[in-house]
Structure formats: structure tokens, C-alpha cells
Image (cartoon, rainbow, N blue to C red; front, side):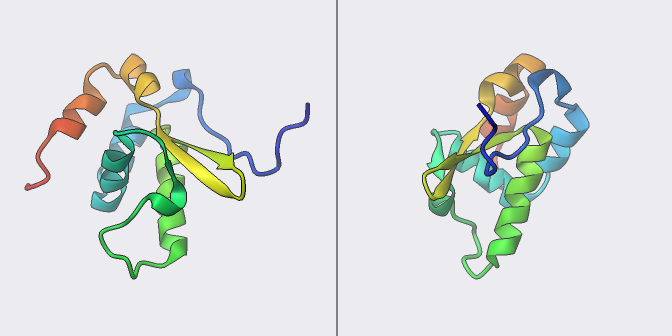
Length: 108
């Protein structure tokens, strides 16, 4: 079966790099997306940013950085996209990292 043209590349678990993951989590908007996905998968349209006036292209770029770092999975769902946190892969590769990040206060 040929791959779907809408499939986006995701790094394999063994290819996840700590520096890429930490960079992806260093931006407040990207971290906010990861926090939303910690409760379970969402359609991309359901993921909201703190600044609703932010262009769609910026939101897409935020998702791309997270996907390419291996933090999220972005898959076709009908005419939209479904996002999910790659928590199992992150935990297997970097034990305790994602739970520590998600448990940290956002106050500073």
C-alpha cells in the first residue's frame, strides 16, 4: 500500500535527540500545545494558542517544530489533522523528562 500523500514524516523513537526535544519544549506556545495534548489526542483545530490572532502559518510552524523533534504525532484525520503527544516514545527515550516538564509550574 502506497503511503498517503498527506502523511508527514516523524522521527523513529531511536532517532529522538534530547537537544531537539528540549528546543521544541522551550517555546511557551509550543509548551502550551504539549500541555493540551497531555490529556489525549486533539484535532488540530481544537488546539488553541494563547494569542488567537496568531496566523495559521505560525500555528503550523509550531506544530512542525514539535513533530520534527518527535514530541507530537500529526496524522491525517478525514479532512483535518489529529495531534497526539508521543509520551510513550519520550518516556522510553528520556525517562522522566516529559512528566517533569508537564509537572513544572508555568509561573517562571
